[in-house]
Length: 336
View 1 (cartoon, rainbow, N blue to C red):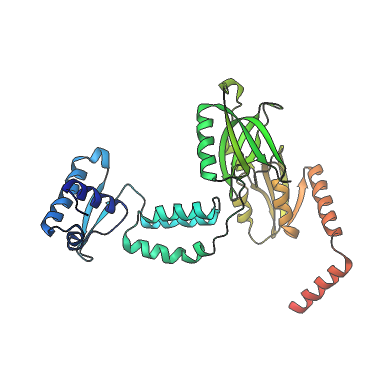
View 2 (view 1 turned 180 degrees about the horizontal axis):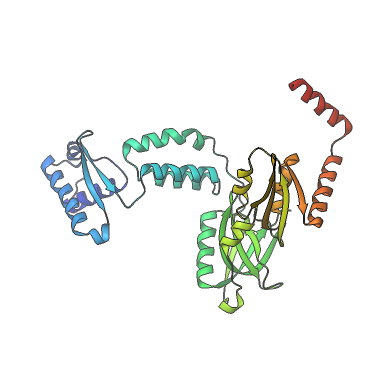
């Protein structure tokens, strides 16, 4: 294929954007021209970056004497170490399908140098190979998110076809207010047009099979104010419910892990290896977390919540037979 000078410059420019290292001699062979012509092309690109600082920012083509090639340096963009951190978060979050995740990882890798790209691929190879996606009911979480973002900005009422936890598919009409990410899933927070207009409802975005956008707009005065930051600080596992202040005794190995998990938590008292902790929380997610701490936690207040926790543990214990307990004790003795 023969290139004009303009086509050749654009081609070299986009190759640099993809993070490719540009060898003058190799480019001359590929484009069937002289090394002097390629050098002039690169100088034209460098001049463009220099003249268009306001547009291009701190971007420049830099020559590496060690590798004998040019590469694109973008000080205002993400460094390779920052990109690696993002890729790790992206893989660990499991928020998207495997195909979507691989596409995003591939695009992020393009912004590293060829050397760093090889290192990045080596570091994440096993994680990508063993990536296990969360089952989704929608065709694309990204498409749903983008459509919801537009509806929120334009204050559009929507109807969603939604799979509940029991797998029944229902339709809700609502005013979308916000989108949040927590514990592997994106959530849509909205207010139903029928029912309590002040009560936020949570929908997992990946369970939304279809979104219908209505011409009717949600007037500003009809959409209650909503603070995503406060919800995130006070909510565990995005379970809805009432706001309450709880107190519990914690005797586990790391009270710092409790403070990290519950942003509103504070230590009221310390006695020996036990701590009295108070936290302000929404919903039933806190119940699930506390039950998961086993004997390290004892709920103190409110009294009603403590009674509910006690009953929950008693019901759980009933699920184990005497034989199960004896086998567990024998196993413990064997380990000792």
